[in-house]
Length: 287
Image (cartoon, rainbow, N blue to C red; front, side, top):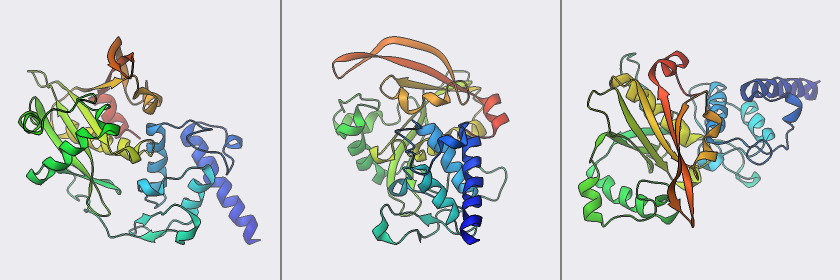
């Protein structure tokens, strides 16, 4: 009887996940891999994370579920509200363990929210400069970021850190407050109706949905505290597969600059995308 109840409960969660991803339930077998077989990009994984959190589960980058079965198991093992779960990969670690609570979300409905269960955003501090420069200079990061693989001398980096920048934050892990990403709004027009958004995270966050969740939090903050009508995302072609599922739903592609960026022996298109304030507010968030 217990096995039947557990199977029925898992099938219910499977149907929820199928509705979330607009996929037929029969395609969501327990062994189906999220990235390989379902081809879920970062934005799709963000939706999965939001769904897990609605069931009381929190996943950080080290506990990224790889299969449908792992996702469903996380929901089945979810603990009562108020506890965070740090899920460790592999069977030898004994399953989920609790982690210290992170920054509390504000209870003031007018206060901007700068935290999720897994990440929180903090202003750039003087002691962050070393991290930000080292981040921008990392070979596996810099080609995706503003310097396209050619970081400037640290003196020039420090001088230009705030050039054309409206506001910027460092993304930190909730569990241990270590910096893991950089987000900024820049190049606002003179009338203050639009600006550009940039974000970069440690490579291990790629495809987990956590980075996209951090960006969604930042976008929500910008629309709350600035009178922007829309926010632009400049996405080079080699980054496009990570976010393409959001086209027409989370953002609009307003233009494509053909062969705009050179990297790794070829020219890549650049996608000029826009998030509209009115559409964003109607949907409340990017999930």
